[in-house]
Length: 411
Image (cartoon, rainbow, N blue to C red):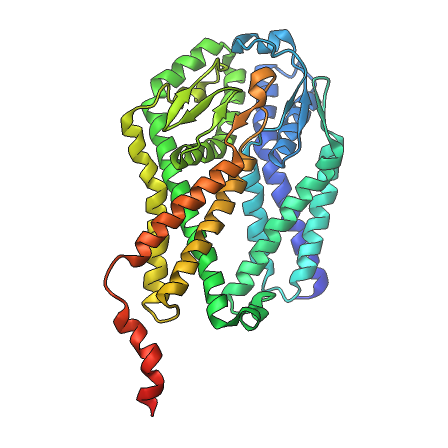
């Protein structure tokens, strides 16, 4: 394809990505405007509320001050005071990252990947400028500096990741093709295996956390419905709350992962939800909070083995794919297990950091897990599990022996 065609195609995909991510919010808001208000309100109010939430999904903080009538159904003292909303709806973030990543993978074999990256990022930046300058209202104000920086930055990072992954799978390992020469063959194998092992362990834990969240939603369904009834928000308000909770569902999954790791998470200042103990304070009457455990029991301690099992899975993969194949010795496999633990700790720490923030005034300014603690504990658990997985199974002496005797056999 010609360079101009590649640039136009990337720009079109950036436009589609922004339209889809904004449309997920604007379309339901428009339906509420049409059905719930009977076209009696200005549509611009619903547009501004939607794009404010879209910016929040890109990490942009919102300064809010709600009226007393708006917050009365939630029963939270001091909710009408000014506060900062920074707890990101990771559902929006994940949608944008996936769309940008797919755009990057499609642009990888276009012949001009850098042109595609620049065109897509510039287009997304220009379009997000329009979103930023139409955001805000009487009760919400946005930080326009971060609003202009964060959305194109997230899109560019995800698109670049898609380009690199697609080119790597195609055998064109730019810019990593010089890594084996710099680190040596064992060093590059350890580095790549550590990345894959850490990603495997982290993905396994997130999968278990997602399953746990789904089970809790099903088990606590009657309580959630009861909380819906107590809010008395009506059909329109119920739709808004449901959509918001769906977009925060990935955030809840990361909270569940932090709970499985051990440090747990907070829902308000001086509160903690953890397998080791639960201290809960007053909570707003959001229906999804019905899944939160009211107390901890001795049975919940059993779930602390889940992260170690994820590490065991990574260690078993290192042994079978790298050690038993002869690419690495047992000592190098142990180094790879340690590297996988570091990668997994960094990944979960970053996710925990993005899943924490302020969700309201007063005590709700502290929500979510403590990122550094989650990453540190998870790295230790993965290291223990990976070392156990590495030394399990049959002896690898018969596999390592040809590496030392290969020269003798050739002579």
